[in-house]
Image: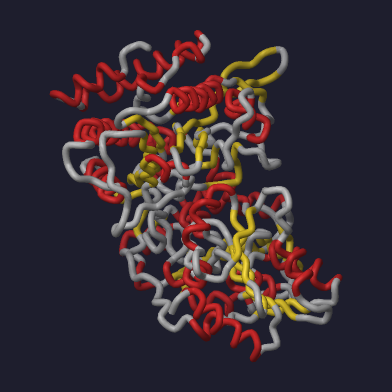
Length: 589
């Protein structure tokens, strides 16, 4: 079936159920960013494969809302689908709820799949729709037309040892119960997959590139219960759960178990799926707030930080070998964006404890580099030669930590304009790397530092400057970030973020430079405690695209010191021609 045919089939189901508009969020029952295959409903319906975006279908119209990372990609993938693109964050783009209200009559009916709709979305929908006398219903209509959606994986669930986790399951449960006591709640439901995996020091592979598994946890004052596919639990995983007094029950029994609670104060995240809320709300008091373990997970302990430092050396070695191969073989052997990504994965796979990629590599040659979350397909991806620029955004999952790195380089002739813009982006990245900030600072207050060199020339980029990164966990992790949007979460000691400003010229080139950084204490002054960033990533930048005159002297000093550190960390693991080339790359600017 084409997207047009799928939407036609959905409209038939809508008509049977008197539904005027149906919303397909990009979500699973755990509100994951990256989804198990059987929950990729929006991608299946629309053909749009980006990680963010949702579709609204009415009786005669359909629209996709997504953010600036995917504007270019969405135009291509929606072609011929009959779905209009609505660009979030762009002036004149209507909010999707306002658009729905304008398209359907008073007394109409809007439906969603409650399992794949967050409570926060349900609440905002319900409030606005009811004020216009429009009903909101939980109707999983795609269930009727997506017949071959597949089944959940049977991949094993295994132990993430305490030597890398830094904290035992017992200690984590104790810390969560202390927070529950402070909030005077008796039951806590954990539904997000990374929080489930972190709490129990377990990992899996139910979601591509994310080492998580399908599961829920329910914690009370005396009990903790994991709901998952019990057949997938390895022997050591069962033993670890037994030792921490965690009960194990089948995934399918989760909602039945929730129905046993009465007169309890239950802590749930606003991002919990609406079906959980509906199951609990009539007989219990719901306390909606942040999952306590989420913030604990974000503040990496010393064992986790040391894991990052170790894998960054391994990853840096793989990157240097890859970049040597790419710069020396482009134009000599046949390659395309997809095969380059496969080659990079091969270099990483040589490293100890490599598990897989932390996300699908973004290899954007020339104009494709301007597609912010570009994904090269195995068939028909662009041929790459020794001409123009290429953007390589990639990362690895290792047993001790997660990496995410972007380097943009010239494979041949590039314009002076490209070199200038590349330098401005690098300058922003360096400035954020160098900054000191008082305790209590939020990411939004630092975002402008990375953008300022571009802003001074009337330029910008349509994505955040930084996202949180997990420890052998999801490459995108909250609650912290560094971006224009207001986020009340302050940056705390041990938080790991990306530092990735960019600049994009549609159809011509894309530029992004990215390292990972960790919050650490800098000093105490009369004005209080100040923090700074430790740069975790080790991989050189290419001097042939740097306009030295643009950089301040202290920025040049930072770059030279960074390259000296790269040499100290990586040179002992390199040899021959690769090492000689690398040593030239890290020589002072």
